Length: 172
Image (cartoon, rainbow, N blue to C red):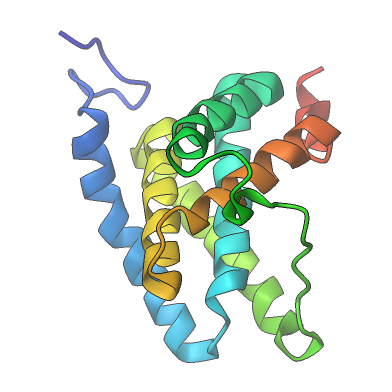
């Protein structure tokens, strides 16, 4: 039987239960903001990718986060073939100048919303809900759920390159 969580509950919910509780809150926030600003799904996915990486860094450290993302990616690479173009993560995503204010505003609001979710839910659970939502968005905009893997690969690559190292400076 699971032990007490960091949030004081007698028993932690299973990952699936937690994701099912968190996901509608994330979907509602993103849907409302997207309707208001017309921010592109690709930019929203980029923000979600960053939040997933940040949460996994908080719970697993940089190397642990990279390994976990690689573990999530490996079965899909095996299923689709490692040289499938879907796994080409080399392209950069540029924020169109016209959407820059909305993108920055969304990042701030989304970060705050995720921080609030982490007050009442385990960070790993919030990250898992974000991951599921990323895959759902990818499936909806491309009819190919594995497209979301590109974002996980980008996050893993960025972790490997040291892009997120600044997040651990305070814990040294």
